[in-house]
Length: 371
Image (cartoon, rainbow, N blue to C red; front, top):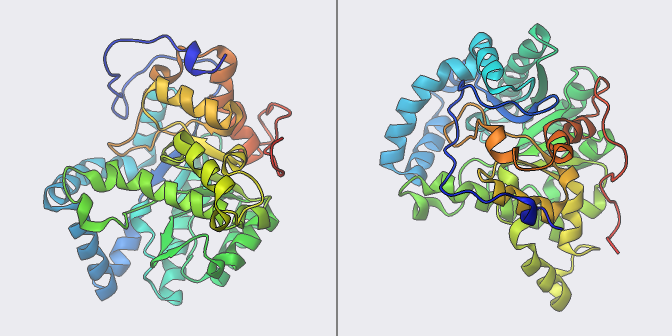
């Protein structure tokens, strides 16, 4: 029986709890892999840079005037949660989250920066994440930043973060200065990530649909999942995931729209020669990608489980932004306890290779086509 059939249907929508709200408890340890940290020193360094101002103006056009105003007010209120460890810990305790895997804020990718400046910006962000992890190693694990606009520099930064810094991987966007991250330009970075077996958290910021989505916050609501869908599709169809089989990809926002409509991709692969750049059916690669649980509704999570397998899904809240979901119980309470434990803890332990958690055995991500 599929996961969808196991869900108890309920009337009405579930309203996600705000960060810091006390929510129902679930069994086992809770490891949240989608959490952000803002580094004020980054913005102080680049506030007057012409390229920063140009990028901000472009983002404002894409988001739309109404959303820019709302975002500014909301960001001011969120600043303590994005920067202050004590407030973060209080919110984690209230939500029942034991461990946060912290990644930099996607608002601070700044891929426009030249190499020397980019190296400084990345260092500031990684030092901020490392400081959190050092102060509370039992509560925080780090994903860092890299200057992906310079793939050779990014590869060196990734190597240092993992071999010397104790990081598990890095967060990157779907696009870098107009290039898809599946572009062969980025092969030096992917080669290093593959060599290290690094976790690469793919989290978009912005959308190539530009001002078409500048109403009603559609830039984020529709645009972000759209970008993840395109990104994963290009990584699959280009053969990138055939060349790099050891890298551990984690997709934000439940992987966008791809997992729930992968049948169309499978059909294109079957009937069109120009859609056969990969060795396997597109659906087979979903068994090698991890997805966060940020899909808001238990029925949607059940469908995701049906498509990618329960061992490929991890808890993700998007702390502390308003598009996050801070009530894991409302997503998971109707699933069986084994499913809950996998999503809350064991899958994260497998993904992050955590020595202090007994990860479930078997069902490793497939490296060959499914039969």
